Image (cartoon, rainbow, N blue to C red):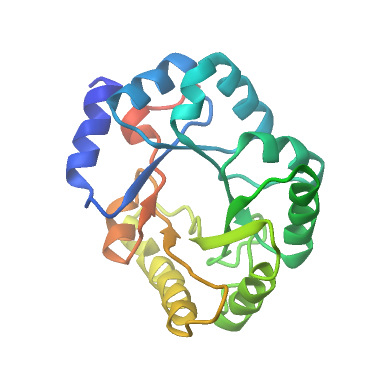
Amino acid sequence: MSIRIAYKTLRKEVPGHVTILLACKTRTPDEIREAVAAGATDLGQNYVQEAESLMEALGGRAGAVRWHMIGPLQKNKINKALRLFDVVQTVHSMKQAREIQQRAEAIGKHLSVYIEVNIGEESAKSGAPPEQEAVLQLARGISTLANLRLEGLMTMGPFLDDPEAIRPYFRKTREIFDHIRSLNEPGIDLTVLSMGMSDSYRVAIEEGSTMIRPGTIVFGPRPA
């Protein structure tokens, strides 16, 4: 199945209110061009250097989509990331948020950000603790930073063979999301819940995801 057909098939299946963000780690410029031609509006990259090379290869077409940083953002990559990305989905601490704010203010950039929640409490993954109060306090802090717009929460969820086994993690993330939204606090307006990938997007949508991050279901397996 071609990338074009795979994307259009997925778009028909996924509810209209759910954004499809294509995870394009290791994908070629030609693959990305085909996806964008099929209607893709949002692309996610894990690595700053790879994103830079891909955008250069795409030329003017790179500006036709919204670029999301979906991998860990290292301090020494913030300056370059600010020039490339529209959204950083992996903000996990006030220290990191202040670093991004400082660099964004220096260049006059306003950036959308999501809080990454380490919902499985996995030591190998970054993210805020999966506790309502911890995420709320981080949201309150980010809301005071003039150049950052807090738009949502993001989670990876554990890598489990059975998508149903991930359901409780997605549900807990949605509960944190709903709790913060219910407070209607000034400056905090969460609208995006980013969770679910190629093997788990159906469950994620059932549990309230408004943005899924598939890759292989559209592009096919990554090169070995």
